[in-house]
Length: 296
Image 1 (spheres, one colour):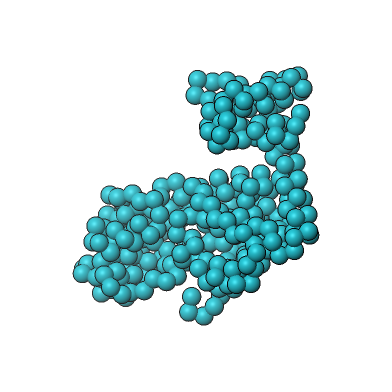
Image 2: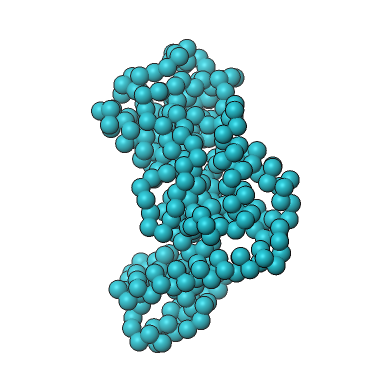
């Protein structure tokens, strides 16, 4: 039983596919299968169940996956901390972001971090869901994740950084463009551009509207907030979005406040704050300070 066996096994359990892991690792499906079979021989139990569309861990497999993921994460953390002790200001910070995160939340912090820590490698990874970010934090492949805050997740710590008010984005010549604010009830008959349906921000918007007895209707779906804003600016539709840094009521876009909607909480998720490397903590702190700066 080797560390590579365990890493591959955890990846297989999470992907549910031998071939997907093989593509990610750049090896053959047979090589991936050999790692799993070696673990099954040594443990004496079946760890995965083959199905027509992939594999799923058995009960024994789930036990080993949980233990292996925890152990691998701890080892990776120890290696990073040892590297920091040896290299001082070198090393790396791995951050999970959505498509609009760096533009609207981290620009100033990235510039300042590069000035203060020029030898640290800053790595951004786009993760398609909050669940994917949590998995990556738990297995040690990410240090920080910028997320829409939600219910507690076992093994992950969340920290609020900002609460974003909701606004209705419309083109400057839209009949609603001159309004100073809107009552959420006025959205009931408005067809909107939908935020990513599987995103935490969309779920929280729907939940907030449901609390007020409002059901929103949509005729267009987008992958991120910036695309929704672009379509609104082009006059393709209207979009309820969080008010983001760097946006102003100028040009062809107007942002009309919806003050009665509960703001969207955003911030950091980490595995353990006290286990972050000094450089990762420094980057997280810079982002938080930049959000507290007047005018942002």
